[in-house]
Image 1 (tube, rainbow, N blue to C red):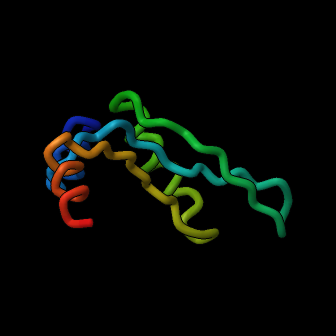
Image 2 (image 1 turned 180 degrees about the vertical axis):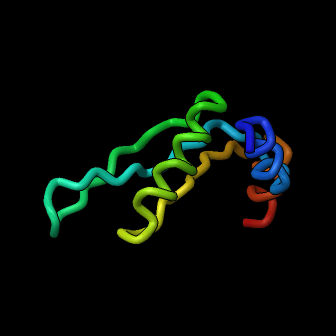
Length: 82
């Protein structure tokens, strides 16, 4: 899957997509996992997610996160509802 295809899938919510990022697990020792926030900037980053998942899926999930912006029209609708 390319970054463009991933963005198009996420954009189905009809909001402005600001960025995509994921939490990459970093194993400090056998009983301790820390997560580093990694931004998706190109297709290689998407490939890395699938590689990490294939290598570490038994240790836990990989979270994909997105930041959206509301359009001016959506903000006005929300203001009028109050």
